Length: 120
Picture (spheres, rainbow, N blue to C red):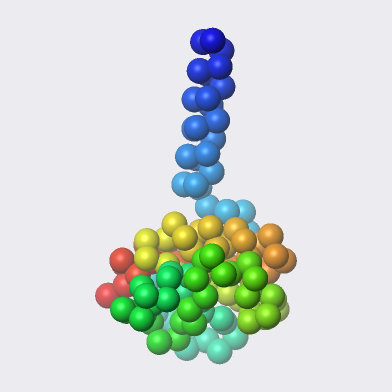
């Protein structure tokens, strides 16, 4: 029985660490760095928050594709040869979105750390 507790603790720690550490092949930038990249026409800017959150406040260069719809819409609405910059409210959903995009074959993915909470 004690052996099972160690396995559960190890699994729990693994899942926590996996969420905290950056995804391999995904660039992470701050909102300050984002400001200098917004005028780049070779980048696609995606906000993965809900449509309600997006309507409440967003950065005009960003297009809203909620996280729940990303896997279905990414292939049709995004170009794989262009960099995709992803933002959410805090950085957690955009990190999940970055992982989804990498699995779909997008090679240039950037996550905005801190999300809209850090945007001034």
